[in-house]
Length: 343
Picture: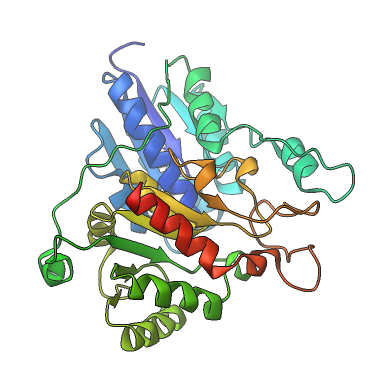
């Protein structure tokens, strides 16, 4: 590729998807050092891209200055100043298509992600289900750059480089002899969340084993749940609402393992090279959203002919009276974490 290649990359949400883009761009940048990347996403996600060479982060403000078609045209004018050679649309929604269309009218090369909607439908339908792995989402992202003429070979390996612990968290990581387990027990969709009572059983068991546990991810409601756990168990620390995303990523990079739902917690840990034990309900790693570099053998899930019935976890489980995720026994999760820590 020419040394002056500039690519605008569009991916606005959701949090886990944007984190996966960052994992891909780290390897893309290493393999294509002459390419310049302009990453367009929500301001909150900027820390995911810190430290990637030749990358400029350009925020989209969809609720204010970039709202509606007039706002998107304003964003297009901002992006046009970079004089891009190509647009990599990794989102394929109305906003990204509108911006791509503006650029297409000026002759800029556009390539868009193939989300594999037909394959995903076959995987999640109840009748005549085609139960086999489909292309990983990170490879679908990389395909867009390949179609633009770049060579990209993803390693699918974790690359852990512990970052400096934030000063205000030094006391939490002072004990260097204990194993440190992150827990990201919440998710955007309730159907992907392991029952809090059962998660508390997991926490109680891990606490008895002497591990230090750190609770990540969530808002005000989740913060209350996490605070109750910290009051009950001596080795449990709530980080929700106390640290920004940059600080959270730094602390996650110093964990021994992360326990997560099929959620952004898994993808954040993957981004900083930490192994994840993940819990799955109506979704399934076969759909292509397993964290970058993570092992399917570390996914905890039940076998059932109705699984998966959802790609994003926004639909209830079809496995019977009890949600499939809650059929998973707490001791199964604890045993897997012990295996990861002692293996």
